[in-house]
Length: 127
Image (cartoon, rainbow, N blue to C red; front, side, top):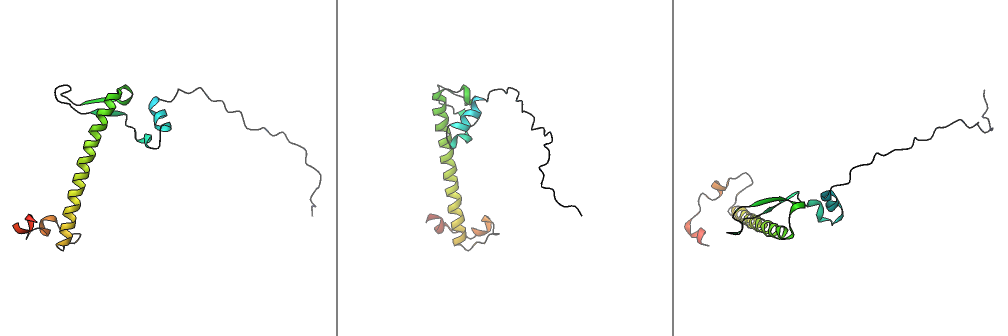
């Protein structure tokens, strides 16, 4: 039977971790820096912006890289996205209204819209 030794073990040569050599990396792109550092919302910055047509001054829609866009381009892009957002909100409201009307008529989840409103009278439409 061996008894534990209380002698300090001789120090073995332990090779530490090899130094990490980093190759110089390319600087981060402007877009990735903006997305990281501007604000919480900046992660959603698009790579390009859609500048809507504007009558005779700009008859066609323009899509431009965000880094090449002017501040006015950004303002026009904001107006365009707000118009899209308004359209989505109106569509969502109309769908919600249709859904609630169908439920009031006793429609179940598997009922089609055509079946839910098959017996719709002109008087009900005028309400």
